[in-house]
Image (cartoon, rainbow, N blue to C red; front, side, top):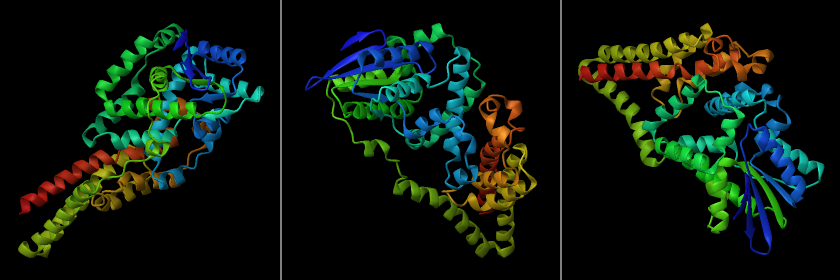
Length: 390
């Protein structure tokens, strides 16, 4: 592998050549390097670390402002949207500090390729698939830590200079950082870095032409280079895009708890009378519904959203595949639909806690997230009461 700064030249059979350009997604230096490389190399194909969705976001930066939140909630994609927005907004905030729009070097590659009529290959996996695979491969007991790390990034005020970005791009430093991150969340590193290295490498290798310029983030350079140089066997794109389904054992365990709860109340009804079963059922409804209602009130939900939380939580706690947040968020977006200006300021408001309750979009997020924990606490307390009744 011949290297020159952030450019890596890789030889393939049949005299094919891949020129890998490692970049920082918020660096002016990287943007300039991309333009210079494509102009000087005149490749047959340009590969970019983008998927169709991110490509459209770069070409139409205002497109996301027209998101149909109702449809996103119905499709149970609100959690993915929140994670995507936090990650995107974090990168945007760092980009604001360096004066470079996130993904500018990728957009630059696309623009130059179009100017020169060079075919473009979108080499990355869809971001929603990456996020869903990250979540599905994270053990349930570590999901809370992952959520905490994501939320914690909101309060991270670290400023990044262009000089610090240059240091981050240095191979040894970046690999050390990824290795350290992998110790804490190995399943996240596997999906975000390792799997995408494989996906990107597959698309780059199969790109048409004798000479290919591939523009990717610096964190992927080592992995992609190793795959190409060692001619590693790669999994299919379908297998790397498959969403892990819950196992039959997990489904049985998930349903066994609500079935046991209902069975316990019925058994108590036979042994201690209908009145006792009714009392426990009321406790269940008030503790789970009350917890959800409290969380929705804290979220600043509309009065009807609060009522929906009270009414639906007793049932959603008995259905493993759906949570009370689905109903509270959907009700909130119907009763308090976001205004255009709130969509426009969302990227900035998401980093200011005091604005969460003022922006209607973030309030929908709060109505989705906050009812969950108090509902779980209410569920535990209700189960203890049923246990004590035996």
